[in-house]
Image (cartoon, rainbow, N blue to C red):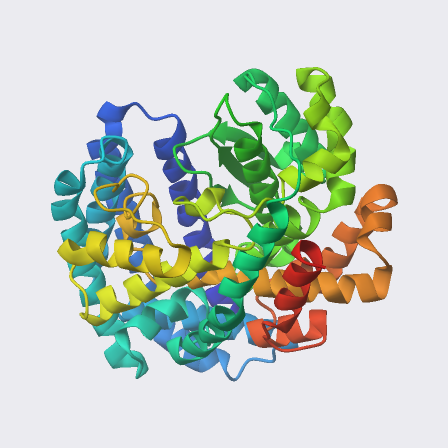
Length: 491
């Protein structure tokens, strides 16, 4: 059957992508700095090989013939996902794919040293090349798909989502979020919060993180935890690679980062084994992926019941102190304060960081903003959304994220979409299984079992809309997210 030939072909592609994922993880964690140029060349060659695999001239005939094969419903969806991957790959010429890979590798590697040095001038020419190539790719995709340039990139991460929908959704969030931020800050002015007393040795932080990962069901036989400049979850389902970064003055940063990345990892490890080597067996969308990490970090990790279980672990690893009391942890881990850094932002102000980046990357790709003007726009939007200025503070402003260094434009909206999906899932879970107080305190496996049944096992067998509607009982809506935030922070 032609479908069988397609399966074999895409399984070979998966093996190449597997190698690329592990090489990319090594580049971010273990590789000596002097190896970067050679690694960039190797990854560029690998990207071309993957691209060539997707542009194999036989694929068109196989897809046409496979439409006449006797396929079950899952195979039909698998065929559709393979066709989507093929369509996306054929939109860009191989030389553009290679150029983007090289420019991204060089920009990302330089970013690691340029960000700590606050060196925007050194970063700009590398970034301008990334933006230029990303616009070229967006134009090619837009012409073929009949979309705007930005929507053509958004389609890669969030199939079916459009900037018009995001404009409306983020406009709705912007309507009530600033008022909630002000209300909660005023309420919290009268709370007594004891700060955690460091230092917190890195080796002890890692031991604590590993224990919490085990508690959250991470399979260490198929994954590991390491350190990188920017936390991420990579690898493949059978070999998931998590990273975090440690600050001996702040145990919360690494710990909550680990909880967040463990959510990503559990999703990867929970994808259906029979389909993992095919596009249909991959995560449905970045928004769905973020819904899992934010479910773990925000819905579970900052819940008072979770923090009550965490309290004795903190004392066990770092010694007793009054700040480790469960009620103090609950106040500490739900503090709301506008800050510069997205990855350190609290749950309430985080969407503002995403809306800022969405506004910028949409205009960069559409040609309404040039790379050289990015710091000024960033400062304007930071003042608008959070009342903070980043003039001259590039490290904590427009240089803080890794995503744009390799041309990952269209990705940022997934973070807030993920928070919205996570709130919908949590609301549905409580309706079906009971309170989080009981589940976290007595039956965490039931939480993971529900997620496996409702989300993980479906991979890309359903559209994002169908998956989330089936799991949560409603289509995309900011209402559950609003209810969640107001109940936790002002209720």
